[in-house]
Length: 273
Image: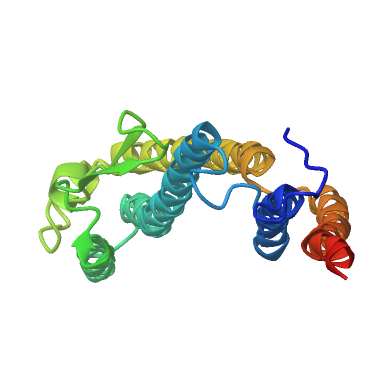
């Protein structure tokens, strides 16, 4: 560092050095004040190039996981709608089983059996209506054609396909809705239909449990990634305040020194008196 005795007034080395120091201090002070204002240690790539890139990668992962969390919720909703419909159908099938068993009563007359047949046909029509009306976002769930892929993670490989067994009385009970008669009522395969529906409900329960586990894991991953990003990106407010206070004092002393350096050559004017 160059020093001057002050005898050469054409170039004021002391003032130049004080001015340069003041600029450096003011620039550094501005950096710390910005960090205090934004709460971020890295406000541009120039602050920490590698840290900026890493934090942006983490931010992208967090946003992807947040979207995956929404997808998990939607998949759970789809399963919930389908499960409700299956449970109602299972209850109706139990009622049909009860009516079928009641019809196998030799003490009943033709009119009584016809009444049971009519009731069973109505119940089967209700099953068909439930199957047709069970939809999610306008798409039928129980038609046998529903198959949707949900991304339940932050990578494209984390996919879960949601699909359901179709509900059709003709295939489940061996007779279509409205086709039951006193002659074929005993041939209704109600037990097989109940088993089919209950199996599907069990599958839904297993998938919902799986989705709940994924939801918990994703939430944990989001929290941990947020913490890692914070360590890189966010400012330590206490530390930044200490540094800003120190630089503020140095800025004042540098300003004072610059003023003194600018006035020091005036002392040589006495030589000309």
